Amino acid sequence: QVQLVESGGGLVQAGGSLRLSCAASGRIFSTYTMGWFRKAPGKERELIAAISTRAGSTYVADSVKGRFTISRDNAMVFLQMNSLKPVDTAVYYCAAGRYGISTDNYDYWGQGTQVTVSS
Image 1 (tube, helix red, strand yellow):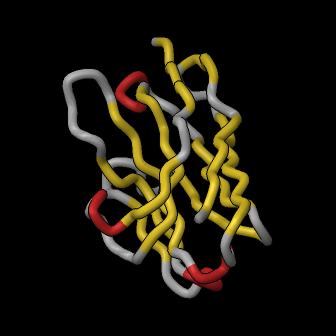
Image 2: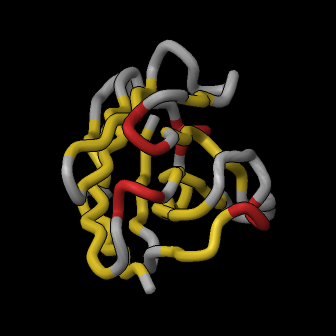
């Protein structure tokens, strides 16, 4: 079992930055791919970024490429978000599982943290 707790969300103006953190506890953290998903109102949950075990591979969605960066260190995974836009407004979720873009690949989920970008 893996427990995930996100933090770092909030309200920011367009063009600003936020850094989301996800603290993992439980089973061996290093054996799981970690992902950040987001769900905006009226839209499906989508994978924004993922990082494999030992940071061997990373995925970043085209919609945030060049603005968002995923990293992991010990029992933490981070999402650095720069040049934020109003379309980035969503609830952001940390997840642990197997490398892939589908929500089905991920077995463990955090409770989510709200990110709101004002224009």
